[in-house]
Length: 190
Picture (tube, one colour):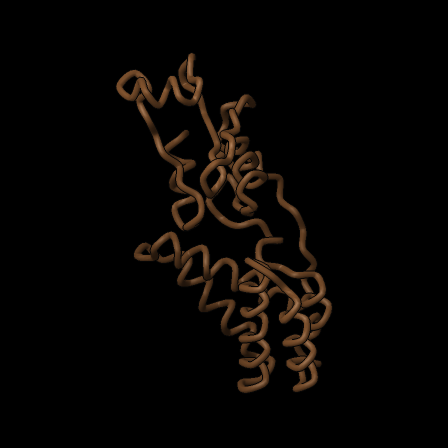
């Protein structure tokens, strides 16, 4: 189950799933108050932050839900991304009809993205690139690109990082089709 969890988060540069044998690494076990096995700990990014002990169910979906909550990620127990991953409601409303994308949409999008921070700003830039592509290639770009991304995600030779990026882009392109964000339960079994 832990290996499956590591595989799910392999494409997430800010999440590392690591295994430590506390019987061999006694100093670490003592330092982090590990007294029973297995013990699962979450360490927030950055130094000086307190570790969080995981004390819930031991199923992959539960682990994924815990990491999503703590790390701000949006993965499913199957290794995909939740439909909400990358989506920004204000930009969704702006691009909800691919047929109405105009130069004014791009101007409004740039203003909205300019107010975003962190990952939201990164995702906002993905919206802007898609708006530019629709303006250059027409509304058919969205369907064509979604088909292309679906094929790439299904391929055998795709890195976890690329898969995550392609899934994010697919989620964002769904906004251009006016598709609402529907949450999927994270605790589904593999």
